[in-house]
Image 1 (cartoon, rainbow, N blue to C red):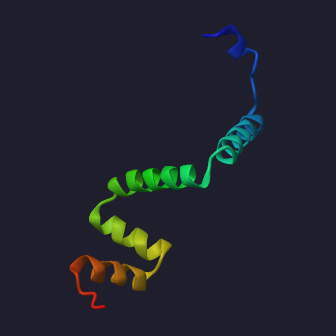
Image 2 (spheres, one colour):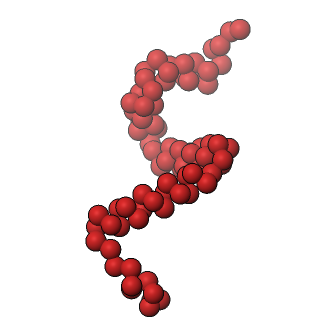
Image 3 (tube, one colour):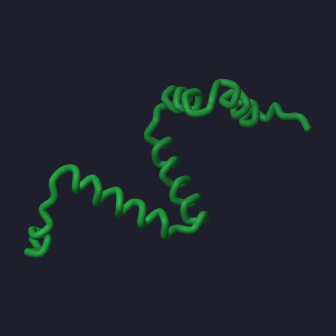
Length: 81
């Protein structure tokens, strides 16, 4: 292991602060478009890991049942302009 890495022994609280500073710095350096791509990719990966039922529950929890029904209606092609 790199000898300099051993010089940076942090306790749990300090390590959490290091994580926060790192994440904040990375996010602050991203454009809105970069953030949108990142979140879209992350959410897509998250949803791919869910079962069908878990995805339905996730949509109900984070949005609501009405939005779930709107999505299903769109998918089934029952939207009339």
